[in-house]
Image (tube, rainbow, N blue to C red):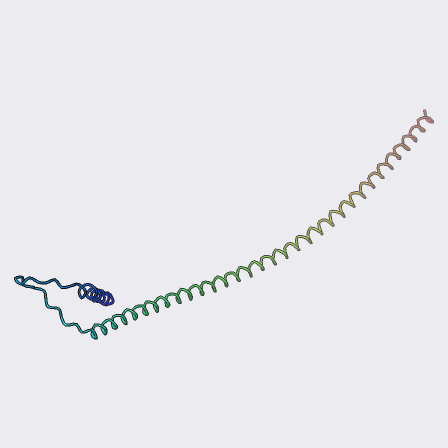
Length: 162
């Protein structure tokens, strides 16, 4: 409908510009004109027709604008929904991260306590080892002295008996 209205408007403008301003060529008397005589023009009807055509064009433009606006609103709503979903996912991921960090902190504290206990046991074992070494050295020294005394007693017995 809009195309036909636009075409009619173009034809009317063409007729107005070129057909009405061109000087009519005199027709020879012996040539019969087969062209239809120009229809009487009714400018009021033509103007009203043009107004109707313009109104149809504007109505089409308004419909197109409404459709574009509706599509834009739908896209905005879709993007808003996606944004809300992304925010929800971000919050869930942040909560999960916090839970993992808290769990790892708890495990780290447990490992730290176990390490401190192991270090304490190791230090106690080292102290007991050092004490045992001192006792062993003292026992070796006593054994050495006892062996020397025994050797001295044996020597004295040999000298007296032999």
